[in-house]
Image 1 (cartoon, rainbow, N blue to C red):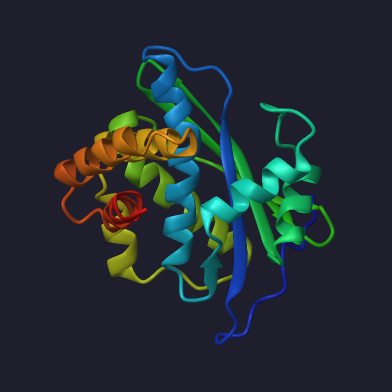
Image 2: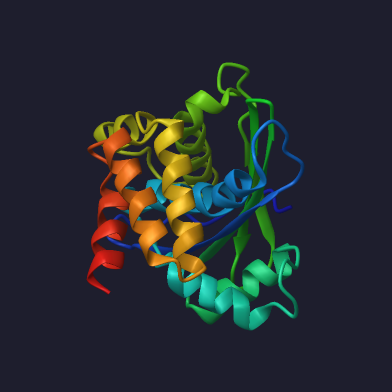
Length: 220
């Protein structure tokens, strides 16, 4: 891992970021489908959090998934730094982010690996080391905390306060429902996806990500 994480970016530059699905590395206490949903939901919310930073641009998760499928030799293949870099580079991203999570009966651990898409070098691995942010009910805050650590590591200014506060306020129930919607949508089950997205919006009316996806699947 490089001691020099990244060159500070000019204020007018927006660097693109490809966030790949997060791997479930051993979770207990919920059904299998929920953890499959979180693999997509956590990644999507990390991407959304980063997209609210004025110097970053998160790539469309659908395009990231498509690029990942083209790089993976088999379904379920572990996303290592090399694969993440290949996906990011193929999309013209400056950074690729992959990671993992483990939910042990409500105690939630997340690790996010930031990869230089050009060189394939792992720049930093961040996690929710704060003992006050290890409960699944604080998932929104856990994800935003990871996003804040990422922008600090690549030498960017802090998030705007309103964006950070909003991201931390998303309930874990809404994130899980959003993840279920992403899972169903990826499986071509649009009616079930729409139902999950609607439930996510009901749980958090200001959930723009879920509302946008809901409009997409209903309009397609």
